[in-house]
Image (cartoon, rainbow, N blue to C red; front, top):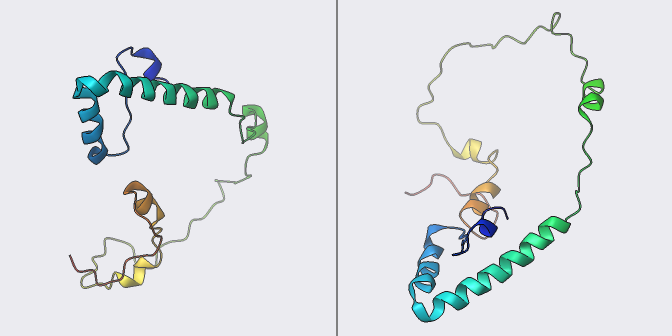
Length: 126
């Protein structure tokens, strides 16, 4: 939204490196270059206009209101729970399947553009 308007020769955003090959091919091909950049510019102009017209979803408090709404914790009397077994602990031959149920795999699927939302089964074969 902010970078593309600053460059006359075009800015192209790709989601990952594998998609950059096609974009680079379009930019290097003299017969496709001009039309490709024109299409990208039009698309970015539309996105920029939508971004500018977007209404804020969240209503934020002022700093004064947020401070007035703070959680009343008396740190002078707070007594944290002492661990039952303090120190460094090493887990050897630990079944990862036991903790896999507690992992949110959705960010992984989003980052790697994978479909699905199920967790991997353990033990994993690498």
